[in-house]
Image 1: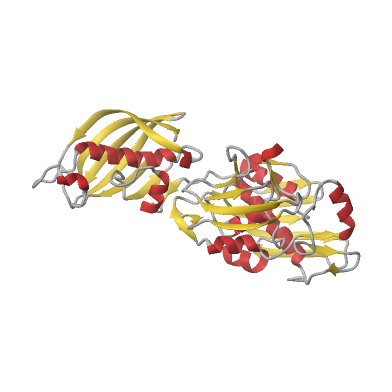
Image 2: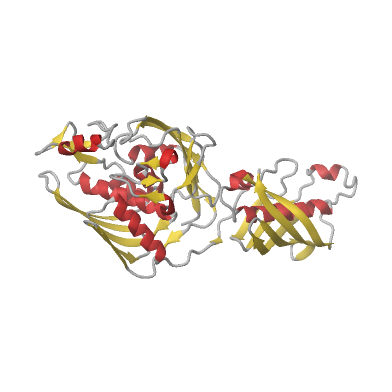
Length: 427
């Protein structure tokens, strides 16, 4: 796990929803470090946003649903399975309808779309859900047991009274490679005998033999199975998607007997209640592309080139490379170039701003305003060719107001230090 992952560019897929039967265009979009997975309803006023998290899940028949009412999101499990299967941590999912397109009934079209958008590491630490002890959940016919482990391992059993299904078992160690090879193309399925009852309930309005494996009393109708045990593989794929509602990558060995969406959501809640503390130290540097997604500053006033270290809500270390090409050296001072002290302080403030953005939800819509400076000291001039190494510690955080302490060094020599107060506001 070299760091959190997002995608490099937006990508869109379109089609009809399985249950609601409405057309939907879904766009995967890059997100900043720490955003998590978030949906945005572009068809509704204000484009309301919903975090892909178990706290937003509600009970729904034959699907995973987030929220209720007009802003609800239906049947999101295949989309989330593709996201989790590729180990993508930060992502916006924009939809112009309440339900994603069902595509071919599997996660594969979403996985292929995400791959075309070039997933990449963009910094930050990976949040990993590990459990302290074994967890057991019973929800109707669904039975789950989760054990501590170093990776996600699934053992799934299903039992349907149909000659093409019967009892099927599958064992999968889930990685991006194995998810692609063993689970992602497995399609949803249903019995002809279910159709009228479900449609009377307003469900499967968009279902067809193009997006669902349909079975009559004896056999599969209108398609060829991709595997003889495609049914248990699809159920395992659903489990991967619903586990994504933990908001983290999952490391556990899970046995799921007759899994359901409601049962897996219940399991996620229990695993979170028995979770080990999440490590928050960021080990992977943030480059200028990631910094520009966090800070609103641009040339000639972006004064941070790289984030070297960050411990969320505690401490950050940033780098500013000082070049003779800096525009302020033209007038400060001709023949004796010195970096203005106020810009050293500004560089410290910007490094602190990156740290503060990690304390709020939806950082793309926020901006940091600095309120006061105290105990500012300039110890040594900073000249072209120097590299500022700026350390900022979070001293106090109360709601959106905070106090931080910054120290800037060139090599081992302190050149500037200051105490600062700031507030986070909407842009």
